Image (cartoon, rainbow, N blue to C red; front, side, top):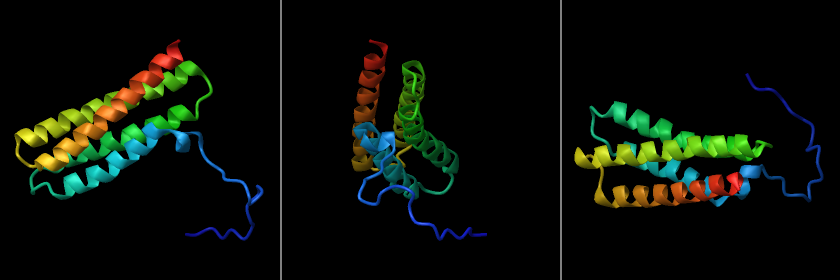
Length: 133
């Protein structure tokens, strides 16, 4: 069922409207990881759906928790969501390690994913530390 919407935007059309997370490099890197995850799991051979599902959920969780944290007002709440995102990124790294050991991921995609996750984790650590200061 679609809901028709004939009303124009309620804000001036010359303004660029963004969510708080849109301005964060860590969020953009996390979304890149979601896209890379799709390519990685698309190449998994049959019989590895459990690993594919876990990687998909964990990579998506990174981006979603960053966005949720960016939208919070309290520093403690922001830090909590960023820590959850960091844990999800670490989970993704472990899944990539397992996939590499099982030889179901190419070296190139493994290296790209691991590098992206290291960037994300590094940024999240710095963000949490800054919020604690």
